Image (cartoon, rainbow, N blue to C red):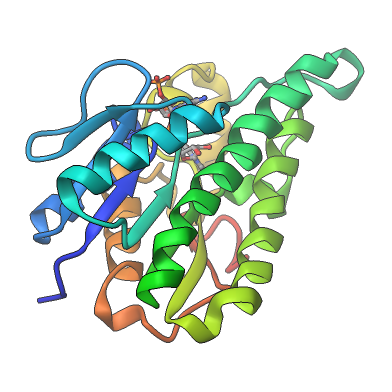
Length: 236
Ligand SMILES: NC(=O)c1ccc[n+]([C@@H]2O[C@H](COP(=O)([O-])OP(=O)(O)OC[C@H]3O[C@@H](n4cnc5c(N)ncnc54)[C@H](OP(=O)(O)O)[C@@H]3O)[C@@H](O)[C@H]2O)c1
């Protein structure tokens, strides 16, 4: 059993974020999710927020704090891809992905850190990707945004590590969600061949890792990059 915490997961209406919210509810936490549309899973509080807009992030936190108390665990999960080869990538394709994946994490974690510093407790988990350190053709924008989360978590660890706050990165490999369902079958088969586990992961497998990082047992782990990728990134 771990201490029940107030948790906020961004992008908790579907995919990996939804599985994270489900797992944290199952482990007895008070869980809120942000969604631009739809709802979080049963047992969660849903707040509307767009992570590219700091006023909407602020309003979401204020609503959660009023209902569930100060946010003690934050999972910056919301993310997008806009793949394309560099020569054809528009500036908008680049900036919008970086602004959502990296800028979004900045806005959410900055807002969460206020209450965490006051409480002298916090768990910050940034959802990156194996692609951040491994690279991916057509993913200069996405890989840059995800690699940057490592520097983010490590700098933050140095800033707030003495205040009972941890900041870690989880780097999923290929996980069965809407994001990977759009890849052509041939490409999916090719990826499967390169993964030592020879399969895609499930959102539940990522969720279990994040729940553990949020638990009392992970108090001395910070600035780490934890892969959940079937061995694809070989520990990176
Ligand atoms: N699937 C994979 O193989 C994989 C691998 C490595 C890393 N990841 C990372 O894991 C995270 C979740 O991915 P997923 O596969 O679950 O993706 P997904 O099924 O496409 O879901 C993405 C989630 O992010 C939300 N979101 C996107 N832009 C947002 C914004 N501006 N403001 C608020 N919410 C926003 C979406 O909300 P809406 O429903 O409103 O669009 C949705 O809830 C992402 O950061 C992704 O990069 C995924």
